[in-house]
Image (tube, one colour):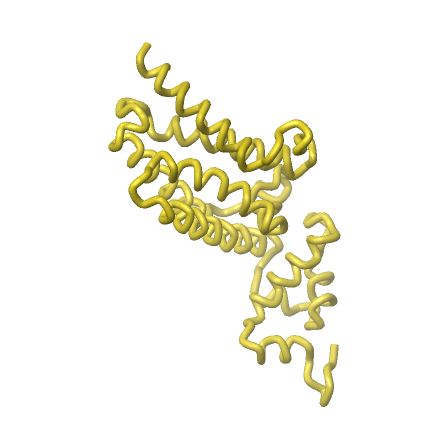
Length: 213
């Protein structure tokens, strides 16, 4: 697609400081607002971005590689958001757990296209996915907060940190997916973030009880 003076739209975008991979990623995420990601092809991306139909292949060997990159970017964004949420309560590890759990939900609400790629249950998107370094960063952040809670006494010290992570992550992630798909609505749960916090408190209280048996 040509702009004024014969300048391509892609060139105009790159001139504003966006690299071609950034343009391709942004276009794919924009198309996801109205389409299932499985139905979006590189040719669709090229047409929407106003670039050569071969341009996406020069930067991503396959659609799966593009999805991997989007997932990694998304988990990097999520990890930073979790870090920022925890930093608001530097001396309150229990409050950090509540903050990062509601932050996880809020991230998915505020970034639905990223969340669909990151958390999508459609295995066609992920069967050949590569490990995502930023996902590991997310896991490390959550485990670090659990460790702080054990050190402060907010959680029993003998608990397996990975099991605690699994319980909390399953609660928040499960609710996030159910809410995103309108299976659970505010009619049933009330304020979503308050509902998440209530569930986290129940899990933490249950872990204290279980540790005493």
